[in-house]
Image (cartoon, rainbow, N blue to C red; front, top):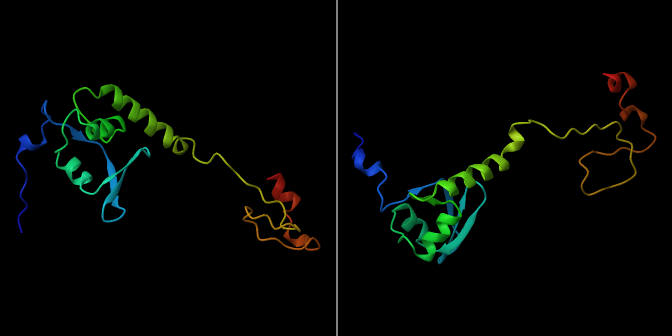
Length: 140
């Protein structure tokens, strides 16, 4: 089985075309689809819009083209400011990776008579002191 590659001209950036920025899409129903990019911007559009975007069939200056450009789904020759904005959004969205863990939870006891819906601790009755953190562990 041999692979066929497009000619190098197919990958070049010309003045009348745009290039795609990373995104995903999902068909919602028979008439609509959802497109979402890497920073959480989204568009709910009529079915076939993702195909038109990917095939570079959107007409420059149209409302659809402008929407996808403003929400960083595509870039053209005048998009340098928008690409800077996309980079800032991306950096902000994934900034938690840089600092690793920013939240630590210390469970010093499981003895609790409450049943808070948000708590992940498996509770024990108040007479079960064996479920307490030892002073030695706390000191470490």
